[in-house]
Length: 456
Ligand SMILES: Cc1cc2nc3c(=O)[nH]c(=O)nc-3n(C[C@H](O)[C@H](O)[C@H](O)COP(=O)(O)OP(=O)(O)OC[C@H]3O[C@@H](n4cnc5c(N)ncnc54)[C@H](O)[C@@H]3O)c2cc1C
Image (spheres, helix red, strand yellow):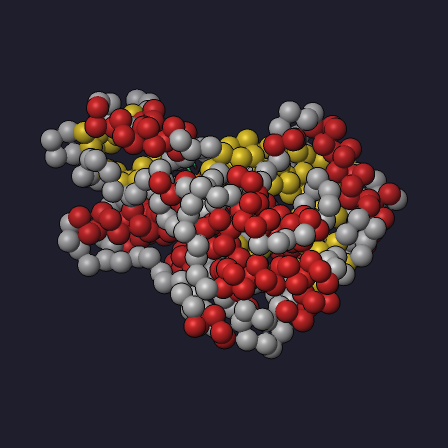
């Protein structure tokens, strides 16, 4: 997405763009493909966005994909046993817009709600400094109860930042809450793609080609070399001579491509400091529907989110699969920061998921599992550890013709699709600025509403 967004921006600015992608499909870590074991087209993992993802939404607008996102205002939290609490906005001004449903939520006691409100007030004033303190210590220092941590802070942050609270920077944790929960009701809306991810992003390919560029799949870059007035990009037997190069690969791949020599050492040292965290997606096809809900947050168990794909994907909705219970259903469960599942065999993960899912939705006990898939993304996202901003590199490099993009670069955002698009736009802007061209691509953040307008 970083490469695609940089490519789209630069194609619009009049550059002749060649995008080289190693895989046979577009989308990178946000992609879909035909799963060999099931024959089904699956996303490598469910991806959601929020209303505050202004640059991502701008990318969708560019290539006409905005109508492929369905928006939800409310989130349903389900406890084992099936009790549900729904958090939704009310007419109250931000940051109090979700307060009525939050106060009514049965998953938390009054003492937890008071503790959470106090901590939220502390986050309201502005983004805290990025110190060595981790967010779990911060929460304890701000008097949070165990239940508030487990059923609120952890639930939101582990899925948003894909890391444990004791390995999360206070600044990024605060940013997630300020942007998604506090700023405005519009900022916190959740968007879910209604088509497989590669279908969603393939429109970006046309955007580039219609503007005179090209997108080459199965084109893995082996290395690049700096020449007097060009950059040589070598991919297998092919060589591309370019005026400028945006490198938009993951941090753990970049080192192999960079030009050799001492000049790359400081960057190589920064790359060594990154750590990443896994995500596991569990895809289950049942002979019947197991719930009416379209998505849900699952509390207190290994499985964390349920996405009812046969209700969410337009292909299934058009076929009427959301209407008749007997037509079966497709459900995806997501486990973020899934370190405990990395070495767990596939069958054990399926059995655990079915057992846990039945605690939330008893219909699972009667349902027959038709097929299943487990997709483990081991290097899913870089970890937003305390002070990770100290080593996230900028888009400008030691080589004037080479720019960096990727969700792990210094965007001020965690590893998300929005972060990746911001990085692509920033790299494109750094390139146009180096040529003193006026083109700008970064889109401003959503304006705060209500009382949040009083704070930065
Ligand atoms: C399981 C999972 C769930 C996620 N859920 C969400 C979510 O719900 N919401 C959200 O906003 N974000 C989510 N993310 C994060 C999001 O997917 C990433 O932040 C974003 O896609 C990163 O984009 P990128 O372009 O920076 O990196 P990548 O997607 O990794 O892109 C890098 C590209 O470079 C290619 N490449 C690598 N080496 C070479 C080479 N030598 N030559 C040519 N090409 C090469 C790769 O094939 C890849 O396509 C999730 C990520 C994962 C893995």
